[in-house]
Image 1 (tube, rainbow, N blue to C red):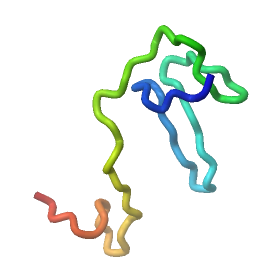
Image 2 (cartoon, one colour; image 1 turned 180 degrees about the horizontal axis):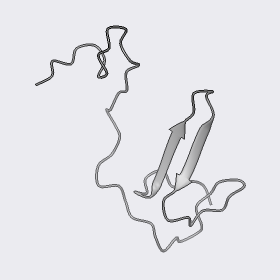
Image 3 (cartoon, helix red, strand yellow; image 1 turned 180 degrees about the vertical axis):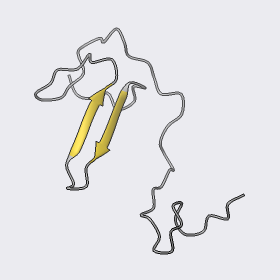
Length: 72
């Protein structure tokens, strides 16, 4: 089966070298290639989607939140 990106246990991280790491928080995945099992017992839909979120690179002036963040 393909990866269930809508599962709350699925997460990804990108390393500084640009590699993408995929992870199942309950280790229910097959390792190579990374995939979710058919009819996974641990599948739970995400409570909030990541749609609409943007991540900004660190600003040069040390503002961790990117441009336009007012801090309120």
